[in-house]
Length: 88
Image (cartoon, rainbow, N blue to C red):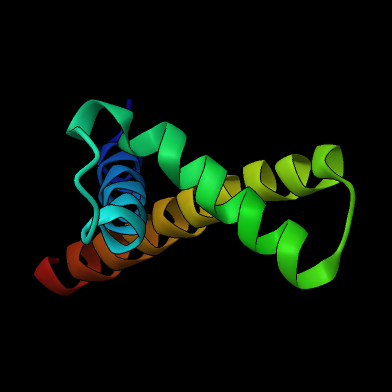
């Protein structure tokens, strides 16, 4: 596995942890339950703000979380490639 892919995976993980921290930092929820609470919170927000059915809200919440991971991955890859070109 190339270095830029490893850096991309690490930045995707950091992005997901940042999302979970942003949504759960003010609660007394245990750390192990943060991923589930993140999904629940995003699904509730989508469902409440748009009035879509619960199944669609959960599907959109999963898509939002996947997009955060994908964008984090791509940003990490691009930054590493840019830095490696600067090093020579």
